[in-house]
Image (cartoon, rainbow over all chains, first blue to last red; front, side, top):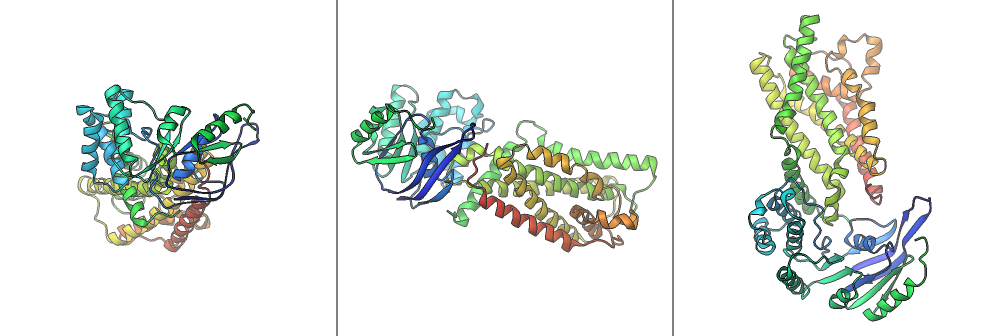
Length: 223
Length: 256
């Protein structure tokens, strides 16, 4: 469970005004697959980062009694001067995992062979993405945070990635931001719509999508 | 949310290993450079003083006198500068929920102190073996004075890092503002050699007590009537607490 208590978050805009991302939100997030909808700039990514705890709210409290992942497939932390293996070992260490187990898993998964021993700067963007996705799959979390699933690699690799992720979802849950309705329908049980600082949770995903479409017709405040 | 201590420890450990690998990774002689710089200063100052004054400001060995000054000054400068940049340099890593920003500061303290210790060993070996300098009289006192400098530099470095959360330009401003420290920290003169009416003002600079404290331990008969390690300790404790306090209450600021 993740608990939000009176959580507010806003950003200063260049015009000196404030953009409200979240206004006094209190809710308990159950162990369920959630799709988050909202127009561009509504604060969906900010919401994910609040969930993860990588940013703090302006006021209110967020408590986590769950292991929350880093953004699925995140590769921005890879140091380009270090080899793939060195980057994998670092992430394994911060999570207290057996480094060799994680390296073996990613080696098996990413299929980039000898490039694992080369600096990341020699990788193609596809290789970086495969490494990052493999690393995300190598550990277990209660919640996987997903900010737009990126299709990685060829048909075969995509299928393999999807199978691995589906296996994870037997025990884990996903909190997902996506603009693709088909992706949301594939993974999510419920929908939550972020609009003008308010989060509306709908028990039915379709209902959330309808609300989102309705919101799109009205101009957003401060956008 | 306060993370359990073991989690902090393993994150800091992983960061230390990563930064040690990255720091001097680009240039093959990276680690060598870190040693060359203080050695260069010691040799240059020794040459200057040989030419113009003929003898060291204290003792028979110019090498020992300048090395104790330069190394202690470098300890302060490197720590404050490296810690100041700890948040920016590691920004992408804070996307991992397990990594707290303060972990990056702790990692840099460990890394800087470790590499500084290595540099001290090499430079002092050079000064003692090649330049025929005397051995230290009381190593424990040298270590204690250095530890106090580490404490204060860590506190000030942490404060720098916190200020740079909001004001990026602070790093440059701090470097400019503290660049005169090389000249007012007894690096190439003794505090006793300063006319007594100015001595008190100079002794307000806490780094003076670090440098003089190290020399007091190194030499058997060094005199420093104004030396007050307690004063340096207060600076250390005060800056560390202020840094931790500021860090705690500015966490909601997002890194630029």
